[in-house]
Image 1 (cartoon, rainbow, N blue to C red):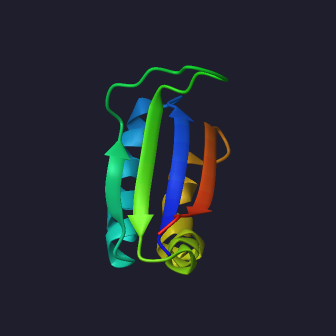
Image 2: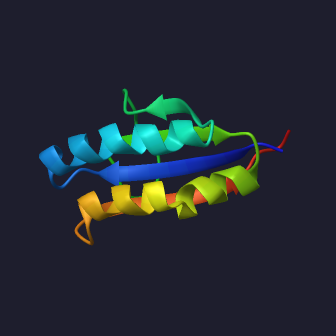
Length: 95
C-alpha cells in the first residue's frame, strides 16, 4: 500500500521555508516521492487553521518512513530548526 506524508504548516519564516522546500524536493525525489498537494487554495472547515498543506505520495509506508528518517531529510529539517508550527504525519493509503 502507498504511504503518504501529510503536512499542515503555518509559515513562520518565509525565507527559511523557501530554502527548506527547495532541499526537501531533492530528498523526496531520492525516495521516489511524488507531490500531490503543495500549497494551493484551501478552506479549513474544522480545527486549527494552517495556511499551507503538503501531501507527498510514496510507493509504500515503509518508503515514506525511510525518506523521513533519511540523512538527506534530517539535514533539510535543520533549516527550519525548532521554530515551526506544523503537523507532520506519515499515513498508509487504502490501496
